[in-house]
Amino acid sequence: MDVKQLRYFLGVLEAGSLSKASGPLHVAQPALGVQIRNLEQELGVELLQRHARGVVPTRAGEVLARRAESLLREFSRIRQEMMDFGTVPSGRVTLGLTSSVGQRVVAGFVQRCRQKYPEIRIVFMTVRGPELIGKVIHEEIDLGLAFRPQDNDEIVSEALINDELVFVDSKKLPSKVDFRTIVSKELILTSESHLVRRMVNRAAASLGLELKVFYDADSITMIKELVKRRLGPTILPLTAIQEEVQEGKLFAAPIMNVDFVRTLFLLQSVRKFPSHSVELIRDELRAFVGELADSSSMGWTRVKAVLSQRPKVVGRYEVRRDGVRDE
Image (cartoon, rainbow, N blue to C red; front, side, top):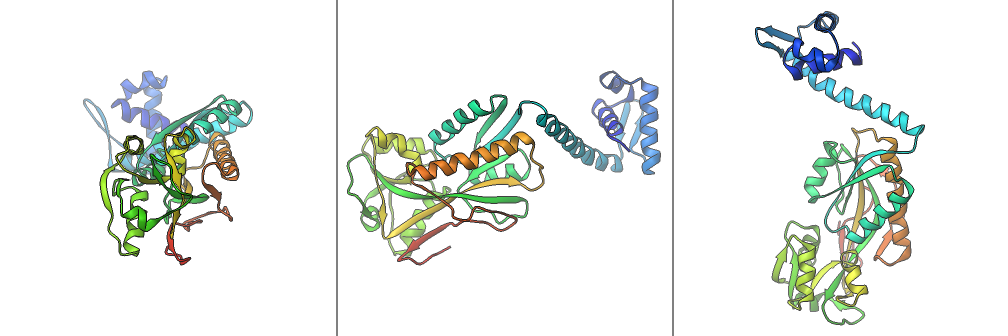
């Protein structure tokens, strides 16, 4: 059994008959029939059921088709990766991220990669955390960035940076704001499904406080617009409001007594062997995020021990009070 036979077999299944497949495969129908029969004889099973209108797969043929598709995709990846070493890096890399990864971060990374790897096309997908995890596992996404740890055998989770949430308002704020003071206000917050909201809920519950939520939304862009219109304050990561703060449209202050710390993870599927282009973009992403953390402009700090483990997670997801870790 070889790659050529598998391609012929899948081509026949797709076309539905030997005669229809011979054209696209550029193989004469008799020769194509010989290749399929040789494959059946080698494996000792019937792969196709012949009838007047063409062919359909047997149960064994269905199993082989699934395996063959996976093998041929991997073969294509290996071939492309080897070719990449002898040429300018090229190809497509799909990067999935959640909405709370700042747009300016994404734009800056694209600009950097465009200059360094002009032939690599980066495709961004902004999706919810759980959906992002599924797309990484099923190999629809090459690399993922998410603020949630993954204890999953099918994902490598690499902690990159720690990020702290801040209090945000349309008016000037003191140097720090007590969380109890924040909770006494009518807030505009992310929806219940969002990690930021769950962290705020958890912190309030730990202090026996009840939140007053005037409005909640999935869209961070919408939340920022409502705050700018003086409809209420919010709690967001500094990365999400960095541009507005620099322009004086929003103001931010650290939160006292409850530290909101979340970790940004780089995710990869363990089932998908990365192409050379994916490896280059992955390494560039690590370096870019680390440099942003070192600049102190994003409210990010590097995770001290940056390791890749499977299935364990490196990093933290916590709400701390009085210095006690609550993971």
